[in-house]
Image (cartoon, rainbow, N blue to C red; front, side, top):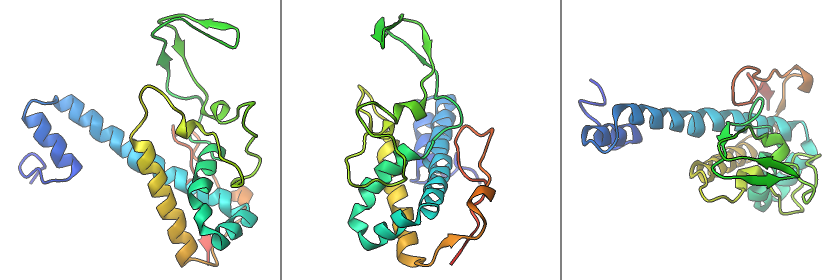
Length: 201
């Protein structure tokens, strides 16, 4: 039995039905399903692992969130800024028009590789030297404004808040079971995150 036989009402089923109706091609359905898996599953899983590592290695912030759970949404924004999302630079972009940035002219058609790490550290916003400096309104590349923004960004925030809140609520004694420097991070994977996060409670 396959999704083509019984599509169902989940996302995969919706994509199958859209392809069958000619609204999208099979290749587009596969591309969309892959994007949802990478952005909605793989990326969020690794980001949440990195966020928990950041909190467990900054126990003063973890304790503050336990005392002041209302700070969680702002803390998640700051964690998006503090935690490196990718290994290396971001996805290459192609300029659609000439634009000058920092004294450098980028011509229409030029390929530009942006650094997510650099984008999170601007002269107008303090450098994220701690994982959850919740006393300010953070400026993050995760919440940047643009003509088009990723709808998955809202879902990623909700998922991160849910994961961290569940940990805070149900595992009050959570701590790393190994030394912080012994936690290995993915190196060749496009999304950065811990290979594993051994904990005890």
